Image (tube, rainbow, N blue to C red; front, top):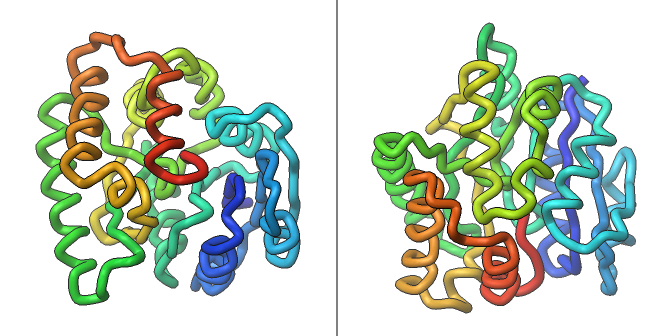
Length: 243
């Protein structure tokens, strides 16, 4: 079984379009698991219309919502999504194909912005792919929870997200840890389109600078940026949540 898991926190404006895009996937043999992290808007009502199962994680914080959804997933393959992201129709099909390859334990793809004109999205995805190539020189996978799949067994074998509770960039750290279990693949043909609210709110230059500092913290093994700063900056700049 394949489990597609989505954390939700106050996303009533964007959630329905996200879930519609998941229900329109060419690959249909999956369970859609949604974890509400304490929403105060209409998000739970919207989610209930699409979910195969819904859970509530009372401990606020994206990391805990992510771990709860992975713990409750029934599938041998777990695919992580974000509640503000649009997924092309063949996205899940490609994700599953890669994760079923022998020796592969995780896969992630590029991202563009859902607010961008369609003509610009390929350019954003191409830029992301170039940055991923440069990032690999520092042995860092630019994996993000909006576009990240893995084998359930491998996730728990490396301790999952709680192993990185105290540090920034848990997705980067988890992807690096998963390399101990097998191959972690970047798939350029598996893009998704997430919200640009973080960059608009914080300013593109500042957001890019913050992202580089997070990357450098992981690449150099400095571990100087604590989780509290990472999540607080993400909440301020993203509007409602991270993950």
